[in-house]
Length: 116
Image 1: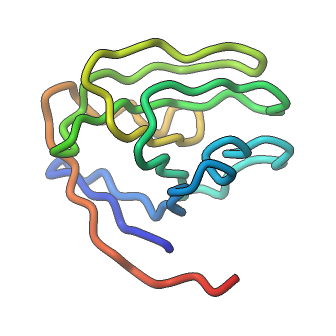
Image 2: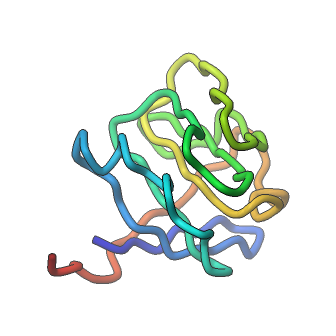
């Protein structure tokens, strides 16, 4: 499934949803990168790793209401922070989350269902 994620300051990104154990485990591993304006939303996830990744990412930690708890840049072969209350994690290209502020809510809406 592809979703549109927006915030009132003009931030918007289309993200693929990783909502199964395998999709969350694989995440962005082995991919050459993300296209501009794209991301990966890990649903029911509280922490990430960047093992087997080839590029740094911006990581946005969200609570159950999609409020931004923290954002950080994580480089390959590292662990992301443990942020209490995290329910979803948005992975973006490095620098793509610079407009996002903590405590702001993101709005997530369905764009399309991906057939596999």
